[in-house]
Each structure stands twice: as C-alpha cells, then as structure tokens.
Length: 128
Image (cartoon, rainbow, N blue to C red):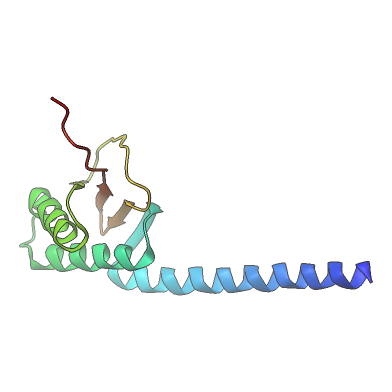
C-alpha cells in the first residue's frame, strides 16, 4: 500500500508543477503584450497588473522622451489613492536601491527599457 501512496504523491506533485508552469507561461504571455518583465515581486498579482497598466498608459501618453518623474508620480498617486498612503516609486534607466517594504507591497519591473520600483512602507506615528 505504501508504494501506491508514494506513486499518488509523486503524480500529485507532478501535476501541481505542470499547473504552476502553465500559469507562469500564461502570465508571461500577458506581460509580453505590454513589454513588461517582472524582476522581483512581493505583491498580489491583481496589484501588479494595475501597476503594469498604469505604467503602460502613462508611458504611452508621453511624447517621445521619458519623463521619469511624471511616471513615478502617476504610479504613486494611483496606489496612494487606491490602496492607502505610504507608496513610493523610483523610475529610471539605471539606479541602485535598497529599501524596506511592507509585506505584500513590493514590485520591481521593467517596461520597455525603463525600470520601475514600486513599494509600500508601513506608516508609523511620529515620536516627539
């Protein structure tokens, strides 16, 4: 009986891995339509898609030259308005960063040749 249980467990793991791979491929295909590549994320997928759409729409509305401040402000406003305050956004073609973020509030991605870091920090009361 142990052999049958082990075989069922092996098949279950195999099917789970196939499902995960299929979801990853579908998600990548959606991102390719917007020319997006996720570099690192700790953010629910729905929020990621909102960030992608906001970034793509803002970039498409710009004249030929990138206005990184305008893109950063658009993403920050979108997320502050929709998900509460304390969102931060860094946009550029080359930058370094090291940030602390709230759980579930981190997204680093590229769109075209622009890199975007969007993250939320915990709002702590000021001490006097």
